[in-house]
Image (cartoon, rainbow over all chains, first blue to last red; front, side, top):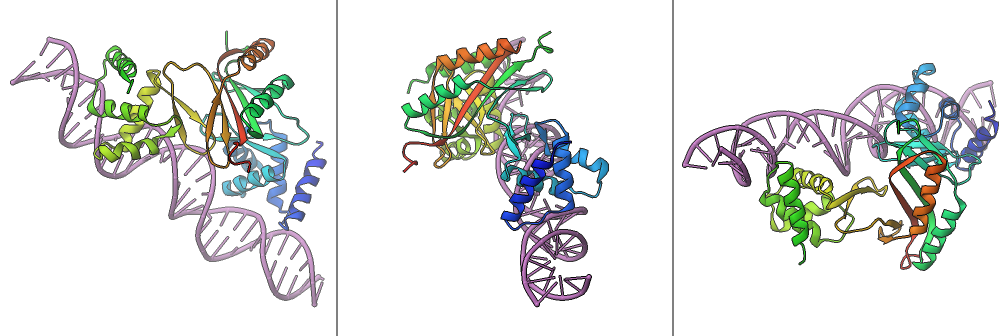
Length: 144
Length: 144
DNA sequence: TTTGATAATGATAATGATTATCATCATAAT
DNA sequence: ATTATGATGATAATCATTATCATTATCAAA
């Protein structure tokens, strides 16, 4: 699997911050990358536990924060009560269609919407740091 | 204060569902309407307690759910860990600019963005139930 | 390559927001 | 007024996440 670049990024971040590269962090990163995007800490923990039962839930949480800070993951809330983490390496900004029936999350990009947002920010003398657009409804499979 | 209409709506909802119109529910609604939008349950509870210290936090939570179901309030998450409730009577859809420095929330409307979203939904054979667009950054006061 | 400083781990207690429980009370229809 | 039942207040429970702490692992320097 092509996760060499991601491992390098983590190593670089860890070196820069004078942290330590542990067996657990490496394994959690590998597992994170092997799973689909938008997983919760609990889901990742269950997957990790299959092959490394000694790794604790707290370490999964800690590592997810680390991945977020190093730019490999992004924390997001979709309103189901738990934080979800999406892959964030070499990804351009995108937004989400969330199916309220099956929980499926589809990503999309729309440059024109971004442009219009800047317009609004200007009008309000607001300086944008980030944004999110979540569209809730039924995906093509669930709307019968 | 012009909250006659809102009281009627609550009464109608309560009658329809065969619930009961209590002193607490009326007072919580009045207080909710007298405060600015986007408050948390805790904030509303503190305000309510000033004049009606006997009203419990659980009742505030329960009443906020009731107001949401009756269309007078809308629950929203802005990522600060607590649900916020906005006034939702006679209001058209709008989105939010959230200042990450001072917490200020400004509302805006942009019909063109709505249109573009429908386009995306069509393209994905997705049927929209609702959406939210939150723009995070610094408001004009906080960006120095 | 040992050593030593210190970051990381795993287990688990703590937290904070929200919800459930339950005995008692209030409302509204009879 | 009576009564059936929904509502309340106090508080225990829940759930996701974070903090604590004794122990272990990493890594840079000797």
